Every structure is written in structure tokens, then in C-alpha cells.
Image 1 (cartoon, rainbow, N blue to C red):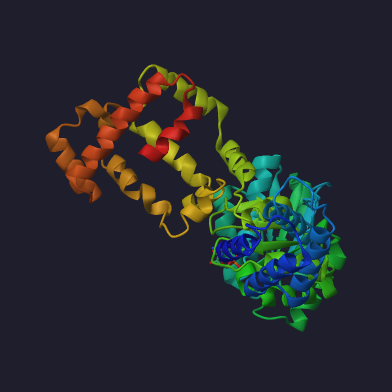
Image 2: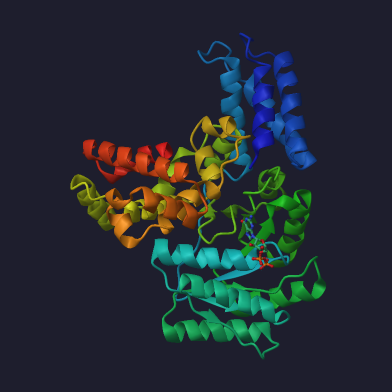
Length: 440
Ligand code: GDP
């Protein structure tokens, strides 16, 4: 995300590189470039203009005798202003109440249903809540099925009334059901339309009135650029929602929506969706997003993602195995799964400061692990726990079974052996294990 914008901004700052001081002229030139970069990223015209005006004022007001270079100073000012533009502080999310009720709104295809599943999963695993998902779309039976499938995946109950045509009643009944069954969060997925439509607006407005939710979230596809901002405006006029969910930030969105929505509707972005998987959800932190836009990486989020996957008991078990030199291909496979659960590999790598740009044109995707997994899956249980068993004939069988070559199998076995040796030397155990993964 934001690749283009990041690059363009960096180029703008270069204009100031050789300069000793900040002057009206060099600032004007740099900011002209910054504004163009923002407009090309599909940022709303008024927002872009106001942004560069503020940056200019701040830059010229700076004491030119400061020790930092003008280009560094400019990066800092732009960073702070981008943060402000996206809302400044991280917005609160209200889950108080028995149950707390979250109402989803947005157009069809924006990612509402997927997000409902992601949010339920997040609240269940991170906040130890007991969510109830509610299907309030009375027009598309497929929507109910979609939510049910998601609910099954994350083991969260789904409330639906397939024969009802009254979404207000369904929402009310669902809240009663939650009270009776002890669910402390109710997430209501509503019907969307392809475009703004009076009936849809009336319907969601009446649901809101009837159930008085803690949070009304507006879900919008960030790929739709300026349209996203316009749709947000219309929904906000009718619903006065509490927060925005920007989905599909993993795609090649130009980022304009993320940068304009807050200013245009004056409502915070609360969450972002970064993929189709149910783990691909992040709370929105304006300052971290500014880091990413300016190519500074986002190491804090990366560490958080790693921590989320870190299971202390598992880690201890693994450490013992490593110390006894019993680390085998089953452990290896589960490590791969953990890393995959953290999200898209390229996106993860891009969170490391400086790496995003370096790997921009390199194709890294989740398939990176595919042949390794295929090879391990083609091993028998005995071979996985005792790789020394794998002789020449077995290597051939594994290669055939996994659709790879003997050379690939040999390479994996050799690297696995080396890793095992290295791991034994590392007393820190699994926490340091991650460093060896890239070598595989
Ligand atoms: P709804 O009609 O608003 O309920 O939208 P859905 O939840 O059915 O999503 C529409 C499509 O967008 C589906 O194919 C989802 O898999 C996809 N989708 C949803 N969120 C994301 C996201 O954050 N990133 C990507 N790449 N796809 C997403």
C-alpha cells in the first residue's frame, strides 16, 4: 500500500537535500511536489491544499539555526501533519455493555461481512469476549450463508431468521438472544446495496434507532478512492456513524481515501482490513500509518503481530526440543504456519524500516512456503520426526510425491540439518529461531 505515494514524497524531500536552510522558495518548491504527490494518490483537492498550507506555515516558522537538516525537518513536519490528517490519536473503540452492540454499515462488496467475522475473531481472541454475529440482510439468502461459514471458521455463533423480512426485529431478537446466552458483544451485519439507496438508508437508520448501538461502523473499500470519501459523507449525514473501517488496504490502493476521510467526515478511522484472511485486521494508528507512508516501516505493529502469535507454552516445549536436538519437521511445519498466520509475507517485510522500498519489485508471496510444505507433507510421520531415515530412495519418493525435484528435497534436508545445528548453539531458543527462518 502507498508505495507510489511514499516514493513521490521521498523525491520531494530530495529537493531540499543540498539546502542549508529552509527558505520561502525551497519550501514552496518542495510543497508543490508534495501536493502533486497527494493529488496523484487521489487525496481530495481541498485536503491536499490545506495540508501543504499548514506544512508551509510550520516549516517557515521553524528556527533555521536548528541542528537538523532542512530535509529532515521537512520529513518530521510532514510526518506530524499526516498523523494529524488521519486523526492524531488512535480512536477508542467502545465494547462496554452487556451486550455491547456494534452495527455495520456500508455498500455491498465493501467487505462488511468479512470485517464482521474479523472483528468477532479479534474480540474473541484478544479481548476474551463472547461475540454473537447477526445476519440482518433479508434480501440475499447467500449473505446469511456467508456469515454462517465465517462463524463456523472462528467458532462464533451466528443469529439469523431466514424467513423474516424485518431487519429491525431480527436485530432486537438477536440482542435478546445474546442476553439469554451470555454473549457480551453483538455484531450486526446489515444489507448493502451497490450504490446509495433510499430504502437501504431508511432501513439501517431504523435499526440504529431501535437498538441504540455502542458503535456504528461504516465500512468502505479503500480502492474506490474519491468515491469512498463521497459514500462516507452520505452515510454519515444519515447515520452519524462513530468510526470508519477501511478495507482492502492490501491492494494497490493509492491511499487517498485513508488520507481524506477523516478531514471530510470528521470521523476517525478505527480499523483497517489488509487481506481476505480473518486475521487481516488492524486497529488504525495514525502515527504508525504516517510512518508507513513515509517509508519508515512500522516495527511496532510487526512486533505486535509476532506477539499475538506467540504461545508461551508452545515456545517452552519447542525450546526443550531444540536443546535435546529433537526439533523435527513437524515443529518446522508449525513454525511456518505461525509465520503465515501473521499475514502476507511481503506486507510483513515492508513493516521493517527501510525494507519496504528495497523489496517493492520483488515478488514475495505466501507461496514462498508452498514447496517446502509440499515436501514435508510428502514425508511419512517417521521421516518427519527422524529425518536421518530419509535415504536416496525415500528422497526420490518425496520429490515425486510433492511435485518437486530431488535437488529441492536435498536442499531442504541440508538446510534443515544446518538449522538444527545452529539452533543447538543458540541458547535463547525459539525467540531467536525467527532469525534462522529466512535462511531456509
Ligand atoms: P460485503 O458485501 O460488504 O459484505 O462484502 P464481503 O465481506 O462479502 O467482501 C467482498 C469481497 O472483498 C470478498 O471477496 C472479500 O474476500 C473481499 N475483502 C474483504 N475485505 C478485504 C480486505 O481487507 N482485503 C482484500 N484483499 N479483500 C477483502
